Length: 257
Image (cartoon, rainbow, N blue to C red):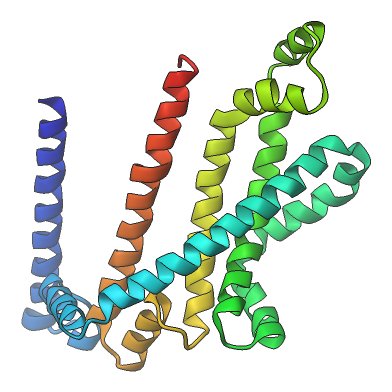
């Protein structure tokens, strides 16, 4: 009952939000003439753009290609970031030397890697995946480093007392204890990967949501631009809620939280 009520409340909120949006458009564009129709989107125009993209079979193709690149790039980022994070934990000298540099790279906007990607790989899939990799890897590495370092020392001491060491200590004690923090780090890494994907696609000619966004700009179609932005937001929220949040909940329940 509580869930149903929450869903109903959200539905009412978004209906009112759409009504207010359409009313603002009608008042400021059609009545007062404060804005030009091509400069301000409206819900009806966005809906028409959605129907056009579906009829032309462009929307689902763009979503498919974008998700494919995002998943490939994110998986590579996890692999690279986890290895780098473990190295930072294992080797103190390496952490002292490279951690400030990694922190700097993490704060660097993903768009900065686009020129490198184009010069090194050209306008292709590899360039986009490279941008995703560089945009997400450092965040994951720092999350791994922090998650492992924040494991309760008592767990490690107790495990060593019972004879655990080396790989067994990591696989049976440290990694399970750090899983909640690791999942949070992966969620953050995914958000960086998703943003980096859009940065790469906007600057390339490859089919995807980024290209659809650029095409809407070139056609001066503000409703199409708004539609693609909404789709990007919805996809990001759905993936976070139904994949990462669900996995995080299972981990926390298994650990007794």
